[in-house]
Length: 319
Image (cartoon, rainbow, N blue to C red; front, side):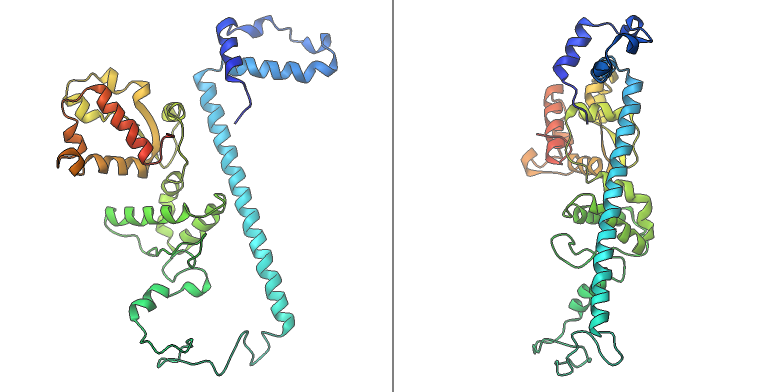
């Protein structure tokens, strides 16, 4: 992000010249007091931004995205180191107390009741349900035996991730969306990188879907941001037509309208699929038809209005 005033940028575009640098001396610093050098450089940066070319804007956005990801990664690494330091200090404190001495176990109580399988219980008499065993398996050490997320709390919602890659595409999609929904509850956002690394270590097949999961967590953006991102390829995202292209073309709308810049946005792949699924699902709200069929014969404005609303509903576009 930058602090350039959009009003000032628009004023420069209206009254300035794109070739303004032709009128700046290469040795201008010789004729300006040193105290004014920083101010002049800020003015030059403002004029450069005002007349920024599409290619330069694309490079700048890519650079800013890389910088943002690097900052998030550094924050996540620092958080992992902090947690590791805390765990190490706890271990040293337990060691000094003698919790690891031979024949001794921390919090061990030989009189604690056991069930018929020899497992410690809280003394309750209810029968043990095997389904409960499956639901809690592997939760003692921070992750399930088959790649599940850590135990349930505000930052570690319970999910189970299969170690082996599901054969069916719909099954893989369910897992990807379940992981994404779980990570969305984790705060701060930078900590998600650490958690997804833990998940992938237990389910390696998810590595190729990492970007789909992370982009699904993107916060809503403005329509201008979604339009500008169309020509900037990003793994885990897809181009999306606000007004669906297939039905619109069948109803006689031209390709110039369908592929117009204001009808194209770049959005997360998983949200793109959700929106497409919604258009294909029958609904009572549309007389038992799918929204796609309901739009047949409708005007461009009606189609666009519904498309914009769905981007908002699915958390892609800011209201």
